[in-house]
Amino acid sequence: MTQFGFHTTGQQVVEAFPEQAKGRTFAVTGASENGLGATTATSLAHGHPAAIFLLARSESKITPVIQKIHAIDPSIKAVFVNVDLTDLDSIRAAASAIQSQTSKLDVLINNAGAYSPWESYGQSKAANILFSLELAKRGAARGLLAFSVHPGSIYETNLVAHLTQEQVQNIGEMAKSYGFEIDPRKTKEEGCATSLVAALDPRVESQSGKYFVDCAVKQQKAWAADPEDAARLWTLSEELVGQKFEL
Ligand SMILES: NC(=O)c1ccc[n+]([C@@H]2O[C@H](COP(=O)([O-])OP(=O)(O)OC[C@H]3O[C@@H](n4cnc5c(N)ncnc54)[C@H](OP(=O)(O)O)[C@@H]3O)[C@@H](O)[C@H]2O)c1
Image (tube, rainbow, N blue to C red; front, side, top):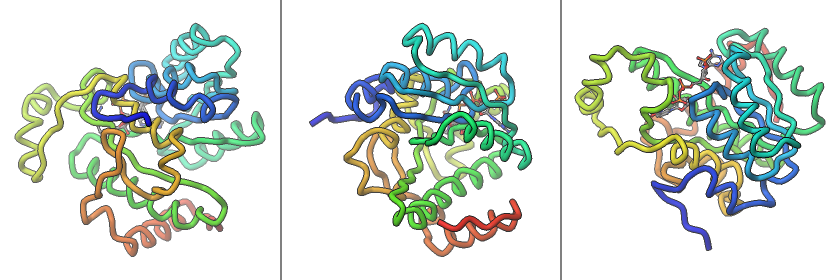
């Protein structure tokens, strides 16, 4: 049985599960060149998917990613979808654009995100974990699976562009002040592997709602594991977007 860990790359995960990627349709948010979303997409390209929708704010940052995908496999339908995730109208337009081009989306990888102040960043990530927990619960009857993932510490992407040089230098001290340690660094290829395990590995199907680190389930921190908070976040999200989602 294939074992994955800290140094597993996204391409290795894709090549381990050829039937899970082949012919399927994926969407990756925040797939701009040089980030983890782009590396996720180019890793997926090795598995002969039917289509990859690449969501981002700027087409010029997606064109090189589409070129890389086509250099790996020219038959893949690789499509830029314009979205600004801070704008609900833009999100709805992006969803319609995808719906108009495919009858089915097999896997959505919610990769986009970056908020500079640490507390907002931490809150947004806790919300991602809680949201997946509730989505997994609500979607279970329909066979919908949801996972949250931590990619590791990857310094080669554009994420550090949101920090000052001083903040980058003091990142270890800052982490300690919040009670955690910064992980050893990973490459982008290693950083996209955990998402791809959640997306492709059939062995994780019984783990819907769980949080993954280094390609394996990890216990969430208490503040990101409470089912009541997860349900409250779902209700708040519905209020904020002005729409009820019956799953
Ligand atoms: N790198 C790490 O060490 C690390 C560690 C833990 C978690 N993560 C998470 O992993 C994910 C990818 O990070 P990364 O390192 O690849 O960072 P990145 O290079 O900065 O990529 C972030 C992506 O999100 C997009 N994005 C940000 N705000 C958006 C918005 N309002 N609407 C649409 N797209 C938006 C960016 O688009 P633009 O190109 O238009 O800005 C970019 O494509 C993020 O969620 C990050 O928080 C990363």
